[in-house]
Image (cartoon, rainbow, N blue to C red; front, side, top):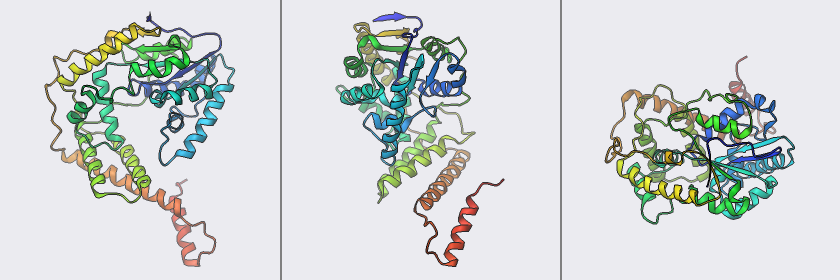
Length: 374
């Protein structure tokens, strides 16, 4: 392991791909990079993505396209990877955490599509809070397991739940393709919220504070909200759906609407002590694997461990939610249903040819009603 305080720009023509891991501050970096793209361009840094996070393109590249956006994702990846491969900028940059989970055969295709000669960056954080974030993400994606049950499954001896998104997985899948010495693991100071941005500024070769923290709060929602969403997922599964794609779209819209609700009670999801202790054992294995690799590590790998003593021994799922929060969430879910119904109607709405006068008038009224006020 090559240990450094801060990374350095790889060379005069650097090609940098940030692949995650998910829930390690990737969204903050992506939003800061996108917001500061003009300032970065003045220093020769070009991001080929057309938004802060090319999610559907990365999912397609990793072999897991979104079920209702498969063709769009594959098209986006062809365009994105082509722009990256053709770039002659001093620094060409791409960030997409979905790439971290790609199997080795997909990794080889990704590297080939991007033109090879890559510096691959992996951001890390302590495993115990990372597990909490991943459980929260699983609920947003339709999961139905309680926190304790999910943790028991993921942390069970011989379980594969952590293998895909882990330090050993990155070393095993990306190392043979790009070379372990081309892998950079960044471990920011958990006590400094902006330390991760300082690492990326050093990597890109730009002055400190070129990147500003995003004006966006990516903290998790209250535990009660995740429990309500978990019950929503369970109810949706129990009722059954005729159209899986439409159900996925509706669930996606519901989760987006709920996450945007302001003013919810503050009650974060806790991590049970037993899970933190087991997570520390796993993280210690990650640290040993890094120490015996030829990868570069920026930061202190000791930050991957947590002190489990202050944590609760066990965590029970919430049994109730405040009336105020319930009202806010009911409103958000109602709005999401209206939005999705409107999208479905527009997707299947006739163009107007061959309609009678009454039907044509109705069609025009609906379209005029959707036009924004000037």
